[in-house]
Length: 387
Image 1 (cartoon, rainbow, N blue to C red):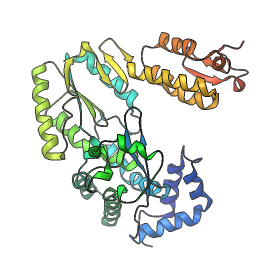
Image 2 (cartoon, rainbow, N blue to C red):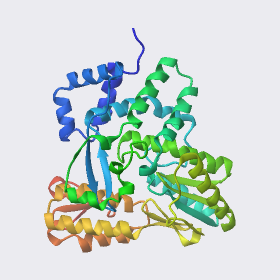
Image 3 (cartoon, rainbow, N blue to C red):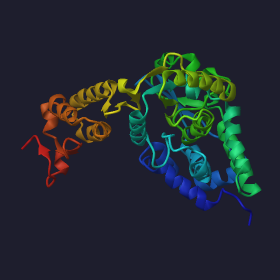
Image 4 (tube, one colour):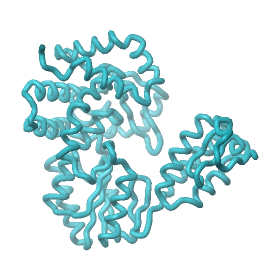
């Protein structure tokens, strides 16, 4: 029997992983309607090396700022999961540092905030940095080399390495802007600056935002930065969430020196650069903006722009009066607020910004921690505005 990663078992697992939280989407439903044939076709294409990614769906989001999104077809997302299921444990087990937080098992922004809050108590100063147009500036040759050098030295058989490298190369070097469907108002495309659009690039620079492989490979790419800062520079306090990162030290001079060396490293090794308008070196007592929070040595608060966005969403739901769609949206924000000092803020937002009519449709649970629909909560203990 031929050895391959493209087994029926691996494809089925990748499909089940892919449909999680997406089963009700139209593309997932279409794929599932003829599941056996679709998986068999994908398996044959992968095994015979005739697989090529299909057309993506392109759309533009405007909050918090205009961004161009290329969403892969469901079939291609299954292929993405096949790759990640094969390689993620290698990087998680011995390569990624603990202070890389985004899109990783048992990490995330809340874990990152806890880590940075600890560093804020240990160090006097911090440097907060951002990479300019990160996903739009990724050099595909460099990111593939970062991936390949680990695969080629890992203790796996040659056939496994060959298949993994082929699939990764196929995904990385596919240009979604060469063939796509546009969804939404075409005028929104004009809001995206040309230098941030894949449509205006040559296909060798830039990765689509949102795909699972883009998220994982971004960590592979910036792991080079993580290793440089923590080992070559010797920083004892450091944390990164996607392309936003914070470095700690006990002097501003040390941070300025590291900033210049980091900028040189990024330019020469990864072909990206720091954002010139998003660099700051401050005392930790001044507060560290990170992942929607404001971190100080004595506590964590929520950033004002997060609160403003939540108020706008509440205003929207007050008009629609759609409680079933409102509750998951509001609860995600209440969960975010709950990781900071925000008891009075959560109370204020629910009591003063929800309309009287919407308040009669909900029950507040657990010290203003989350909401439930009143018609689903007859025996639930909580604050009921209708009683």
